[in-house]
Image 1 (tube, one colour):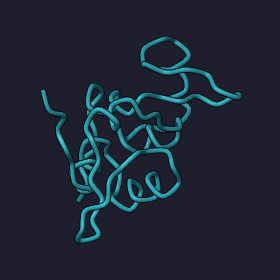
Image 2 (tube, rainbow, N blue to C red):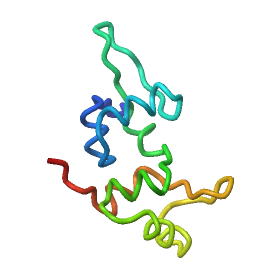
Image 3 (tube, rainbow, N blue to C red):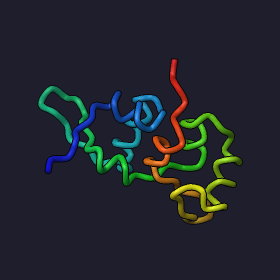
Length: 103
């Protein structure tokens, strides 16, 4: 079985963020990616699903305030973990909760 390969725009749509944010995650080492011969990044869907977001990133993606995201995480309503005093929420939760539509 092959893993789905996504463009930055497709990865951004799945996580509800701008593609520049996905590029920043890649360049910052948070999200593994490959570079095509043409200079474009490609992300595996499985890597995107296992990546974690900050509570603020998650909140912006789904259109709620960050305090709401942190309450959901603390109540066990999200696949999240407390890491160094901050909530890290699985990026796959954006699809489950529903990403905010971007204009």
